[in-house]
Length: 358
Ligand code: UGA
Image 1: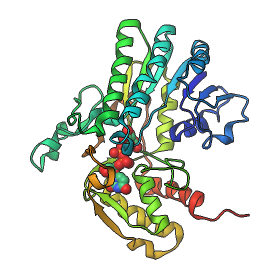
Image 2: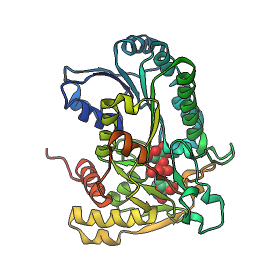
Image 3: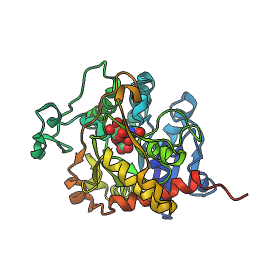
Image 4: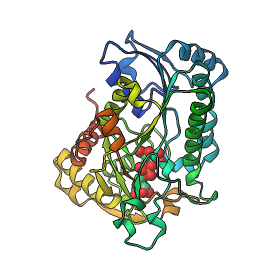
């Protein structure tokens, strides 16, 4: 199978390459301006890498050729970090919508299967979050179902939703080209994939505020308190990157089941509040380091405005219905949160906290 991957050098792309390049039947051509996470694949004869963005006029000539020659295009390129959504929304909207549109058009022109990575943020907030407390008793008010759940989000000055809106518009463009031109598509809505190589540690190999896993890791490794935004009551479900990538592999291997569908990819059994996550992470880090003092690592609360700046608004809860992925792909994530954290945090510890041997 000939696969084009746009944004192949990021967290998800690097794990997808690990998975697909382990099988000789895959030939991959990828684009990304960064290669730090995929250097171990650069010499592979079944992988052609373009160290550039895919949306420059020069790159698009090559992308068009690659789209014609391939069986499937997977688009992973995006700015997908909430701290960017309200601080540089123009770039966020461009990256998720306007930069992606030429790719959607090329896939429509050549009728190539487009696997379009979207986000769980296209659901916005739950209906339950607008109702009086206690309304989480009814799953109809919070469970996220691919073909039923409406989009619910705050007003335009709450720029947190810039990403969600751009991704939702990209989904609609994909769907519109499917309806009008017969574009074969699959939309993937990831729900908090965790694993080695996710994000970065501020002032070590990146700047700004990464997602929660790396924020908590940075705090643990630097002796700073872990910060709970608005008390850490928001909930997330966390899935292992390995199981998430396995879901994508299953899509590629079952085109007739996967095409023209949107899929939630997440693990409903691994739900935690951010306060619970912080506590579990400090206890896991005590195990990894053998230093019991981490069991009591300080945890403080901070306002969203102070942590993210103006225009941030949180998703209260993301509980996926994964029945469609189970039914159509035979996908069933089983890796429990403590196991996911142990693997992920150990990798962070080895990459950043353990001094390199000279
Ligand atoms: C982000 C992206 O916006 C989604 O598109 C993406 O699908 C998702 O990550 C993902 O990884 O799958 P979100 O879960 O809100 O969404 O991102 P995080 O930055 O990881 O935040 C999770 C929660 O932790 C939020 O409630 C946030 O306020 C909180 N948080 C974050 C803290 O309490 N402390 C921190 O230091 C950082």
